[in-house]
Image (tube, rainbow, N blue to C red; front, side, top):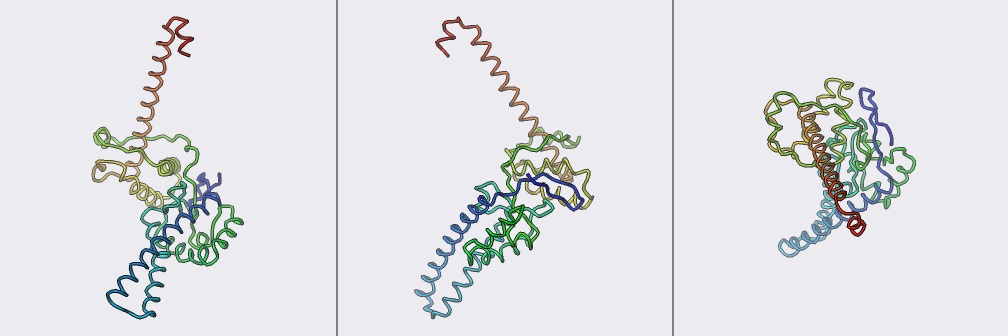
Length: 274
């Protein structure tokens, strides 16, 4: 585990992504983007040669533009839309976040994406690997310039935090359908709620909005209009914990009932059953 310091000097416990996990994630992304790039090139060749009959110089220019779009623009778009998770990172449980723990924005992803061909493609991943080896957080050059880092979301659950449900949300929460949250999102919400009181007003508001936006697809219907993002986060985590407590109680009751049933059997039957 490592510590991540927010803009308000609040320390958060995080697990930097292992270099091997980052390398495998990068390999998965490279294979996927290469397949997309090859498919687009084949389609372009067929369309341009069969229909437009263009010259070789134009074909070369179009192939270059496609490669830039696939290996620079596409990774940037994917990272922004998924809040720091490409396909490779999704498979390995990784996520790219800002150095202060917030979600990456377009400018962070653009800097990372524009250096990706240089660090990965031109050197076979050697530059990124060398940078990751000397970095305590396994950062590559794009991370240093963008102010980001890759973290592992498959870590131990965060410590308990007090949650409550605002009075105006009780009726909505009683009928809301809350899906199981990804472990990483659940952890980041709990970490935010545990440190919210120490954050500045603007930073606290922005972080709550980011997390509420990520949480929204897992809750139906949406909270009532005018609900504060932090109230939304606290209510959903409270609901998740209450549901988990009920499941534990039911499992404990079923286990006790089973043991009572076994104890009432004759001794010989118990031995044969075991």
